[in-house]
Amino acid sequence: MPKMRTALISLLILTATLAHAQSPDWRSRLREELPLLGHRNWIAIVDSAYPLQTSTGIETIETNSDHLDVIKEVFVQLGKVKHVRPVIFTDAELKAVPETDAAGVTAYREALAKLLSTSEPQSLLHEEIIAKLDEAGKTFHILVLKTDLTIPYTSVFIRLDCGYWTSDQEKRLRSRMAKP
Image 1 (tube, helix red, strand yellow):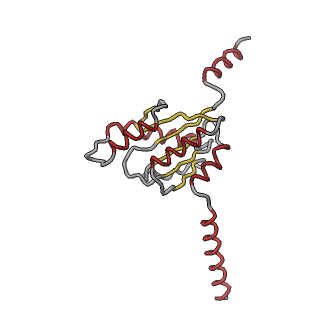
Image 2 (cartoon, one colour):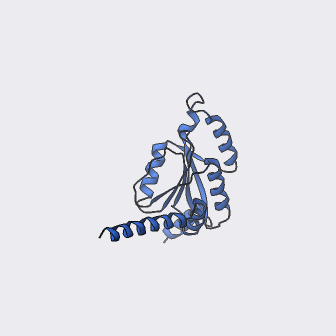
Image 3 (spheres, rainbow, N blue to C red):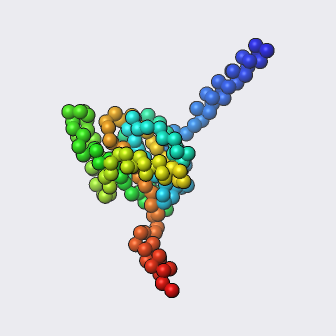
């Protein structure tokens, strides 16, 4: 019996090691999931203290990577697809975080502004964005990419919208449908 227990434990350790070694990194996971994601799905690039949410649709991946590098890569990958377009949200609190309380926040704000210069990010309170993710995660998939950044309120949240159908087109359609 002890030999069997030892063999079983060894097998479990080997299986866990192989599973970990074969698991894709966050870049591969992003490329894998992006074709499956559509409007109403979210991608969040978050700092290291971001909470692990428990809604069933929320998947969190630890990237062990630089925050700005993860943001850049997500936008590179989003730029390669035609089926979705990003609607960007940032924490409203970020504008008020002082350098004296969070060293590096000024440089981060400047770098983020450059990265998002061609976008029009919306600013909402952090708790409001988390609530949106939590609610969306009940029905839709949310991909959270956790980074090594230790500056508060630096998360970037991307709600995916349809890339080939605009809200104006949707309004016109609904208007036509409402006419007898």
